[in-house]
Amino acid sequence: MEVIISKTYEEMSALAAREIANLLNTKPNAVLGLATGSTPLGLYKELVRLHKEEGLDFSQVTTFNLDEYVGLSHSHDQSYHYFMTENLFKHINIPVQNIHVPSGTALNHLAFCQWYESRIKECGGIDLQVLGIGSDGHIAFNEPGSSLGSRTRIKTLAKQTIEDNARFFSRPEDVPIYAITMGVGTIMEARKLIMLANKKNKAKAVALSIEGPVSCQITASALQLHPDAIAFVDEAAASELSMRDYYLWIQKNKPGAPRPQ
Ligand code: GLP
Image (cartoon, rainbow, N blue to C red; front, side, top):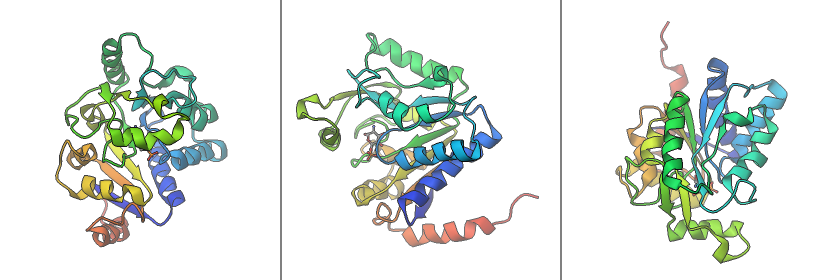
């Protein structure tokens, strides 16, 4: 996995946004996988800026979000659908019919999950998937113990995740304990993965996912098996990486490597 260490959150977000902009410039009808959480907010802000100031075009883009809380409708202000509308979709020119976020209110969850998987395939698969990482090393809502071959399904959230999310809800009993999430296997089928992490509280999860053994206990470690995965991290999140200096060395010298003529 390639590791790109940035001095600031803004720099990290801009580098990740550049990956998406480069993709859209070569493939305007790309399929993007998107994530929620505080981590990708800077990335979405930068994409909005690129759209408004540099004409980055989303008119042919299709998106699939990773996950959603079970029980929250898309108009609930803590739903992931609402988050995406407020922080990205309403600021860019993506057609509403091209947006996919798992439904937290589907009556038949199993049928919905199967439809979500088939819809991704129908759209040609995900070209680039954005990921954050939970403090317990999860991606999307694939909590410790999730099969590395898992598909879109309902997950019971880990206590750590419920505690991490409690800050967004006024009462502890309102914090959802179930979510609908793409599986690790679903995520691994994306052609490119970019994982973002900032702040010290992610340092341990980042180190375990990049340098630890591949394990269902740290589902982000599955990225080690992906042929095209990049971790964009700030210095705080990189602080427990034992090979930090090596990654910086590669980062400095890779641009000068011989390229095909
Ligand atoms: C939730 C989401 C993940 C996200 C994680 C971290 O668990 N399902 O996709 O990566 O939160 O969120 P934050 O970026 O706010 O730390």
